[in-house]
Length: 252
Image 1 (cartoon, rainbow, N blue to C red):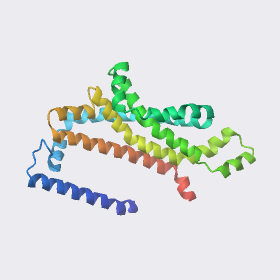
Image 2: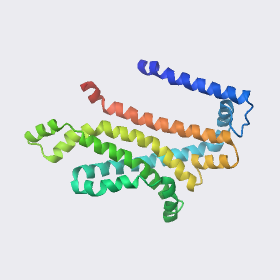
Image 3: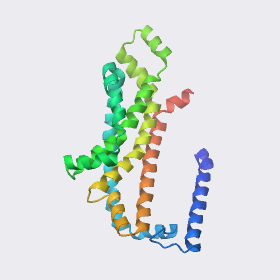
Image 4: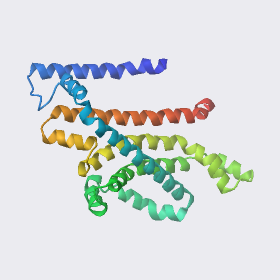
């Protein structure tokens, strides 16, 4: 905790200086609120409009968590299949990479046409955003397993399943958590994008309505909550990683 406090004050100071300069510039140059509201105005709007966007926030959190869990499950499953089955890896890994070259903002309208405006297309969008970093990170973790340890276990009579379960999975956990942390932040972005394209509630809907009515302060409130949610999801995965990988830090 002491180390966190010692390192954490620097970005806080930078943020305070940035907000101070922003506030001063808004007052000094008399910038209209509809163009660039001051931080104090954004904070005031965030407090006063809480009843208006509370349900939007809950909807986005729920959608992000559901999409992330499904995307993480699919990403881990894909990584295991690609690692264990050579034919599958050679046949599908290039296609998986190509699939990420399709912009989600282009694919999303097609998903709405195919599956309607319900929950399914939104979950698919978040899953597509989340699964790839997890699959690639886990696959790299499997590949980076110490070859000497693999040879040692083979000499000891371990079969492929035992090597995978007792050596390759633990060795891949640090890389897997790196992918999970990236996808945790992407899940919020994916949820907001899916809400832009068709939803009744959510931060993306709130942001769209605020933008169309030139309520820039509300747009910044929505942006702030997207950033906070992404940071909270990232921190949660990092906390779980620290708890589960204590054996690795103690071993070092």
